[in-house]
Length: 178
Length: 218
Image (cartoon, rainbow over all chains, first blue to last red; front, side):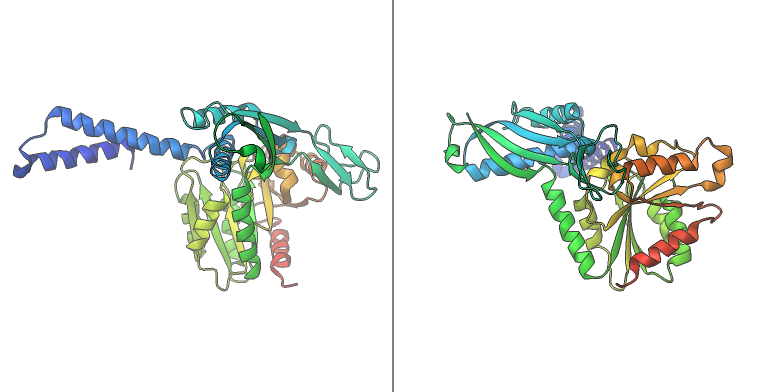
């Protein structure tokens, strides 16, 4: 049901309840608006939560927030200042979009202000035919020596969390857990 | 300040669920394919054809993902598929392992040999999400550019098969078959390439043979 439809239904329910004799007659306009507003906010909160899955950078940002929550509860009360990420060239993940998505979904919450330190990882491969290791430029996935297309990708596909930076001066005893 | 080293994948939760799905399907002897393409390349048409021609021979279950509507799932049912589950992502640009797991929970897979997961039409986002499939099959059509593999290397690199659909329109388009083959092989030298037309049926037999080999018990 659309937001509009939900608000309308809520209004109709309210009107019905208000017009029942035991509820004291017709609804006041103020009450109707109140329900619409309250419902809208609730719906919007829900929508924002679902929104997180819409763009893949936002899903990734949400996964990082989930990770931070796990780390926080595992390490006790500590203050995470930064997260180090390694993002491969072949992941189609745009660092700026990831940064932006992370800022949006952490705003006002416990991870507001946590820095994302993103290291872009270029593509590297090894030739399965002649065993040579090489960097892949311009997305040419072939051995520059023997020309074979049978290659194994060594780096450039990762979406890894490499480290977190913790402020030792706040809460817990995180330094001992490393 | 202290730096603590961690070893975790950003999408570890998705990967964990996908590994579970893969193990369960494998244990039941069900091959699974994740079908990806840009919108309108012909994923649903290919599945309709496949169901009609091969459904009696290879029992297949299908999960049809769409941003909105269950139209694709309805089309697959109309084509004769008995076990179809739609996933409406409500705006999300890709399927993830959690959605597939939920859909699988509502499918009864006894006796089925093959599972098709029709992804959302998108060549970017679905490439990062493992759904627990055996392999990805990517479709391009002749009404698109033949440089699609170069524009979306992540997807073509991670796919095992490339299907070129709408070959009946080749005469009317600037799409060049040799060029798309060369572009695709530059990104992925081991890509199996199958050219076909879901409209005329040309080339479909090769696709069916490939599927027969896939589900043949080893």
